[in-house]
Image (cartoon, rainbow, N blue to C red; front, side, top):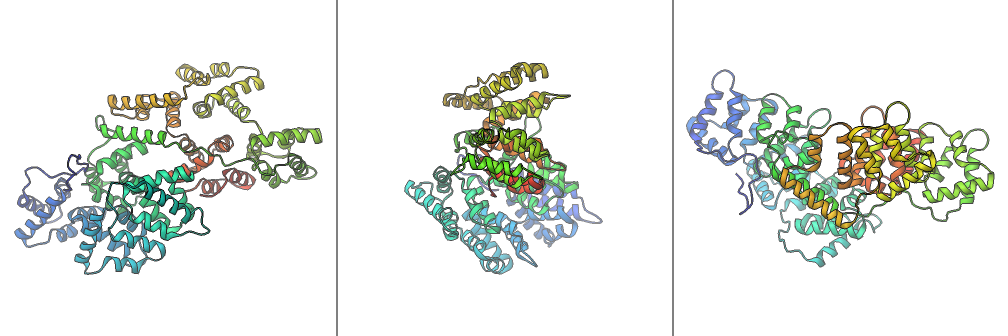
Length: 633
């Protein structure tokens, strides 16, 4: 069993078995495999409740008592995924890693994801043990085998990681942090092409403590997270490896929580990945992984394994997991602390909000008005010109174009656009032409008119707008519809949901720095009292629209760009597209924080917003959305 540092808590899910008797255990396993068939239940119960150190003693005793190799017998008796899992647990950790890497580079093709996961996440000591175990098990040099099976910058970085020479000093030089930030910036963003060697040297050798400060400073200096620069400057397996290194520097447990989630989400399960992580982290940080998993994905690792696997294989994985964080009393105090810290970090590390649509340089409203008139005059419509002009001007510039159009042609530009365009493109272009407060007022009106109410639209707008934006929306609503927004909400909603929406519509939420500090203190106090993150409790204790509005408020406070990234993803996933939500968010966030939303989108969903739009929409609507999106990440 891995020994925790002095004073640190043990964070594995598998511990030394008390009153351990290796001879007795060897006999139990022998009897479980003797005769016709095998007692798989007895095998998994025994092996998973012993630490790896104890399993090695059982192997030795088995050999002494029966003259047989326990691992060979287990391989003979068991099959499939269950066999792979049990045999993986029986190997010492370094030899288990060596076997995984051998499998990854044997035969046709290479499992680059396996190489990345192991070499990006292991400590210097674990790397040295892995190299020695590989030599001992296969009488081959690991570096030579990896060099022979990979190429380019990907190979170079793997070789650097294989040296196991990452600095481990926690004393960080501020001057060196600044120098590394400058070197990375000059090697990527400021250079025509990329100096990959700088990325390899800094990310491959500096201590984790040092690199965390480099990443923080890089964000402050460039306005971009290091991950965004890596995605923009590097490509292929090399890019994936460098992103994995960054994630492990930030939090190894979070990296593995994400890997486990991806191994089980969607159709099919990546069992090799699932087995490798559950085996390798069971005596290191499985409790941390569980906590982050529960916080990040709003479900327990246990429940996801339970729903995604079956048979003895499932039972074994669940025992390795060590508990269900969705069960009463199982969500650890530490988990709530992790939740709080994630909230606090997102609140503290407030990055500059940036839109994707900015005022056009050399703006000429006269020329734009004439070009738009020409695009709509006569037979047919030149949609491309309309998109190119409207999607590349700020809202203030669009209002000038509208005035100029009226002065020149005595016509209402909005009316002309409405008659020339149709469908989703019309909604998008007309939305861009409206002043933001009037656009939001119209969206709220649409959400409340006719049969039924679009509660999601009401929640999305009212829970995310600032006080100033709410006040502007109220004025626009009164001006356009001759009725107060509060009265409209009151007549169209009911109960607690109505009271919450009307409260939000007053626009009196405290927004100062002191209020943020008090909110953090309140959140921390809540964590201490309940052992739960606020959002978790809301989801557990509330239901329906009331729950949805409170969750939206909390998520918006935690990380507003992430809230909108989630909404955009949900509007495009699965069969069919929710064009109204997609349009509303793209229009309303285009000059506020759509660039930040793009970054959160690719970070969470491993694909860019640009790619998602491209795969889910078509025609001129697609072209207009991509113009607003502002680039491919």
